[in-house]
Length: 150
Length: 407
Image 1 (cartoon, rainbow over the protein chains, first blue to last red):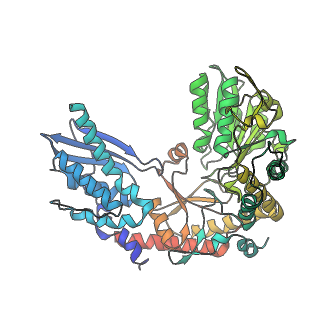
Image 2 (image 1 turned 180 degrees about the vertical axis):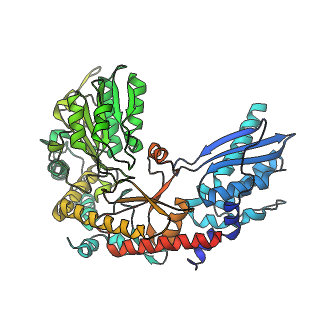
Image 3 (image 1 turned 120 degrees about the horizontal axis):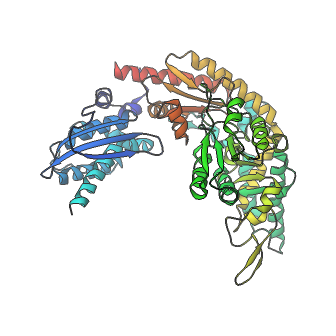
């Protein structure tokens, strides 16, 4: 059965796959950058851990509770930023923000891969914050750690 | 009460949302407004918009009469002794904050206790947390029964002679539980405490009689009872209000202003600094006229029937858990196996059905229920059994939809 194309643009198969089988779910061993963030209007929360070595994100994992959109987005985000430089990860986050706001965006040299499936969220304004939660956590972690080094 | 006739008075209900007729099941968040209220507000702005309590001119007198007339309607609506006991506020939150900031901070100290319950809305928790921080008083929680109801035995045990304030919601915005306010008030008074009631979810749906409840304060909002947003009222017993200091100072609330010292107007105006929410108050008065004409008992009976029907229909859907006690107001909070409440709400919305998803401003209660979020359908006088059918059908579709994408 189908509830029409509108819902199918939100709940793409690849999103459901990440929701059902989240990548990088769990906790990192040893020292890591840890960020807790929640969405106070709905109760979603995420704990994101990242290892940053020589200006590069070498590993990222998350635990948390939330809806299909927030958890699949966290799964995709951790997958995408692993191996990126801090600078590139922040750039990618800007691209993602533009995508969520339904703005034109230039993906440059980035391979958005699965993330592109989240484009449909832009048409559901009430759900944008679900999708951006983990990205905001990532930005905050990287920015806070950059602040500490300065 | 003829529901179809009632529905005719609510213009907003007659529209399609996402290609389906709107089924509005979010009245516990805010109710819809009948033409009588919309027109009363418009009429004020079109014909007699003026400031109150100062103009010598005709429009000013008209506006003052309407504003103070609304206060009298509220007095009668909750059966208060006099209009001196009715203070206009922005809503329930502001009303509870007024009691906390003015009454509680002046009367509580480190030895004292405040008693609330884990089911309270954030607006009946945080003001008391702040009072506890400022005065050194202890904030205590009455335990809940397994179904979320309050037992008077627990109330007796939690409320002691150290308790100075007891604050409880009359109807839970999540569980739909109807709390035994009159009995809790007796226990509070026996221990020398004042009783504060959050009436945001009760005043719209059932007859409230503050004399009968004997509570010391009662707070409620217009927007949940067919009135405009941004207006509500605090009822307080005169003996308390007289001793309380205003929390907002400025125009409208003064008697005499000197260079160093000023004095306040008498009750209730000393608590209403600044130009009041005139259009809102007039709209609230019109909402009370509307509800009174239909009859709170009729509304209560309609909702009781509807919620019983809704629960029996939801029970037919496998994997849906409903929270709260059996005896409840028109609120059904639930979770659907494997489908997060946000996802439930989005899929229902695609079918034109508006429900709330999230923590409902009750995070401590979510923790007590051991969930992070829930979905909630709430009913009012304009909802029908046919709408319950659409809701349940959409709920089944939601399960199927997610069953398919998981399959």
